[in-house]
Image (cartoon, rainbow, N blue to C red; front, side, top):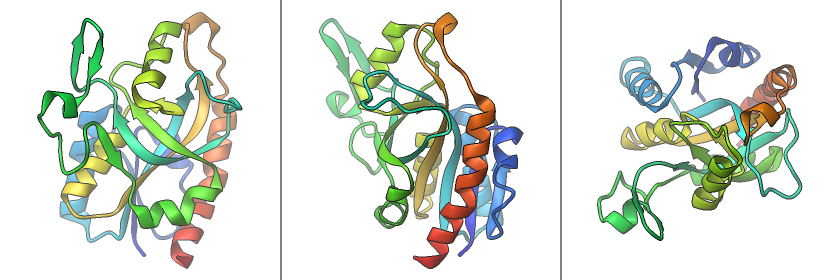
Length: 212
C-alpha cells in the first residue's frame, strides 16, 4: 500500500516520519492550499492507495467526555462549515441551497468506509469540521459544533477528502487535539502533547492499513 499523507505545516509532517509507505506532504494552511496540493500530488506522483489528511485540531465545546490534548480523532466525515447561506432563522447548507459541492450530501464529505472501518477504534470517531476562520470566541465555537456536530475543527480536511474523491482515491481525516476553542484568552494549548500524540499514532495507522 502507498499512502499520501497531507499535512498543513512542517511541524505536522515531521510527526509522520515514522511511516515507511507514505509520501508526506506539507501542503500549506487552509482549504485552497490543501486541495491544490492534494490534486497535484495525486496526478503527478500517483498512484496512491489512500489519502490521509493529518494534523492538529481544536476541540469543540459540547463533547462529553471532553477531548484532552493528544487525543486522536478519526473523522467519520469532514464537514465544510461555511459553505451555504445565513438566513434570519439559521443556516442553510448546500443541500438547502440546491447546489451540490460534489458527489456527496450537502457539506459532508464522507470518509472512505474501508479506511474508517480499519481505523475507527484507534481513537474517538466522529465528524471533523473544516473552517476558514478558527473559533476564537465561545459563540463561534458553539456555532461550529451546532452546525456540523463535529468533535474538533481544523482548516483542511474536507478539501483534501474532496480532492481525493474527485480523483477516485479513498481518503480519511485524522486529527490530534492541540487546544480548546472558544474565547481566545481562555484557550488551553498543548502543542507538544499534540505532536507527541501524532507521532505515536501515525505508525500505528500505517500498520493497521497495511494489515487491512
